[in-house]
Image (cartoon, rainbow, N blue to C red; front, side):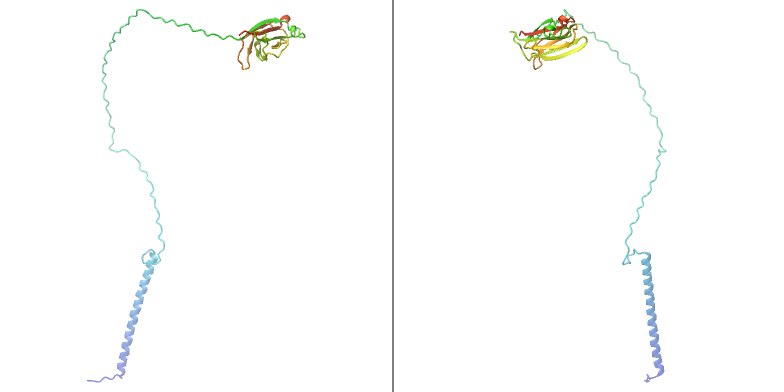
Length: 253
């Protein structure tokens, strides 16, 4: 068996060359791996840049709300069916029907033996209540009651007495009507004119005698306004000797 000399220079060189070649091969592989890793990293960043919403992006941005697109309305004109055709409707003819004639039935006339006549009964007369006072009328000169009046005065006066000639005070006396076209409406109370008596009353109608024909009337009332006498009509005179109409009321009921 041959002996090797490990101290030989050629052997040492071979071993060093083998070491160098092995170290070069390792550097090449590492460089290739770095290039591949760099290429992969670049591809990853490019993908995230192009599509940031990809699932590979650890920090994706907020998802935008997609815009709502409202379709614009379109007008569709309406038209008749091209197959539609108007079909005339035939009206049935009316055949006149003759009406039956009407024959009236003879009516029977009732026999009237007599005509009953109805005579209405006359209305029952209603009794008119009689007033408790009656009047006595005289025409005298005003100078009998008023000596200073002479002929420049016109009026009516009197008294209200009971059946036994006792004076009745407080009875309302009212004169109404017209005198020569003028309206007369005066009210007084029995007892205010003692010149005629204790129950005397008086109305001054003018400052001169004036004739009238029952255009004035006088009436008595109680304090409640209820009448105690009928409307007593009287006339006035145009003479100085009869320019005072004297009316005395006496209670008879």
